[in-house]
Image (tube, rainbow, N blue to C red; front, top):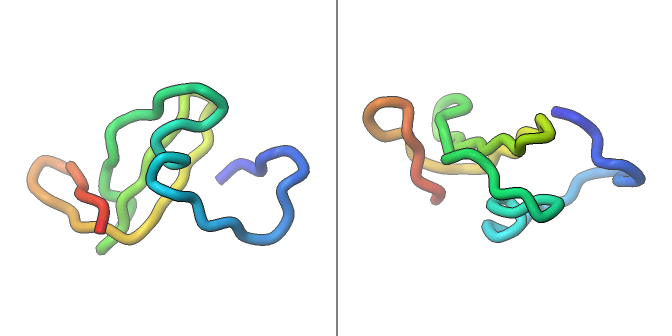
Length: 62
């Protein structure tokens, strides 16, 4: 996961923040591991949170 400039420690992102980062619409959620959904921005940032994996690698946020 890449570091966002001047961000230190941990920050819990809202679902809206996960969907829109720096004004860019991110990819569809995908399974990042057991019970984990992830999204990736065009800039290459990846954000993951708790969710449910469903068929074909898709994910639903919990």
